[in-house]
Length: 554
View 1 (cartoon, rainbow, N blue to C red):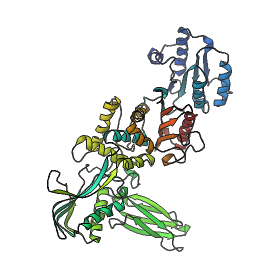
View 2 (cartoon, helix red, strand yellow):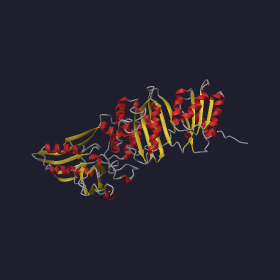
View 3 (cartoon, rainbow, N blue to C red):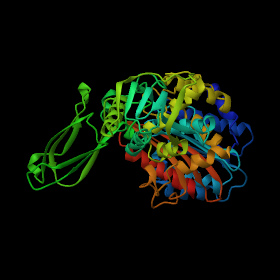
């Protein structure tokens, strides 16, 4: 005798979704009871008076359905079985992942049939959390494991960006400036000069020259007291919590500081000369803060592969070029550390203009002294930082917004990553109504291995942005566009999604994600989230995401 144990706990969760438009997805490892639960759902439907002919159960592990290999085969079978049925049809698919491109079929049935859909799949094949919401109607379209926690990778920048636009405002600026205390007499500043770091991630070489020229234009040639770099906005920890130390010296992980020059990096450009001679090496920004050792060889493959490295394991700033240089090439390396790189280069530029100070050091600028005078300020609009953070998935820009959120909320100097997390949590709780204790936000960029969020949470940020137009307009404009620009420039080019998907990408080892907006063929605006986990070949995950978006666009 065979007994079927009723899974009342799971049934109670499913009952409230029966006859609702959401697709009911049941996942788990093989032999965990998914099939049993489907059959109990069938019993529930029959108890509710549903005609047995209107309940179509397809077990794709059965030899009965061996001829169903892809979505075309599945469509042929389903439409044939349902063509003469009247009333609502209940479709139950067991191990749906065995059908290639099954998502196309499921989406078609929602449109073409009056149906209620239930699917099961083994986690070995379906390692993702997905959610789709119709912003036009205000209704959920599709949910799959959307409450589970996942590492988000760079789609976390959506959380940081929306919060920054809401809390700081689109007109907010990140300021780097010169202030002084004392008085200027002839060519001498009798007092102290302060270089105030405002964590501008886009402060470049030309901006540094503007600061130097501003000082020179005052006729100042000597500072009698101190030339001080003020980096008091943040603490001295230059990496986020959970960042991987061996991602140095890559440019995507610079040393964070309120003083950032050229994103904390040096652009090393090499060009070949005559065969077997030294190649030309040009570094930008020019500075004597670092050294360059040129051991490269021009146009000789026997010299080995070109390498441009920094002795980062010893926190050194010796840049070494070695190997064959056959064509022009540029490598971006971070330098240790960002604040020292900025300050050292600034002092060197001043000296080249004949400007000296008695003492150069790090010190806080007095904030209450009436005698403090602003000499010059470089202002960076939040919109500019936002665009690079999203279009280019720039980690530094995202972290800058994260720390500015921290500074505004905490109202004290030397804010920490924890202060940034508190700012995110506060907005999450008050604006979205979500409990921050259910998630882990460790940084602003998604780099940290400690970040864990759900697709549902991310979807709420997309919804919040959409329904607040002052946030949505700059946010939407900054998102990469499929097949057009940013990190989506080379994706979905030959699909309906091209130019129609505005979304943020994300990828770290084992994780690929995509979240944003797409317009359906009926004109409805949709928000969607896809987070794929445990994926070693990211190309497969991206192919899945691209198909997903193509389906939503049709």
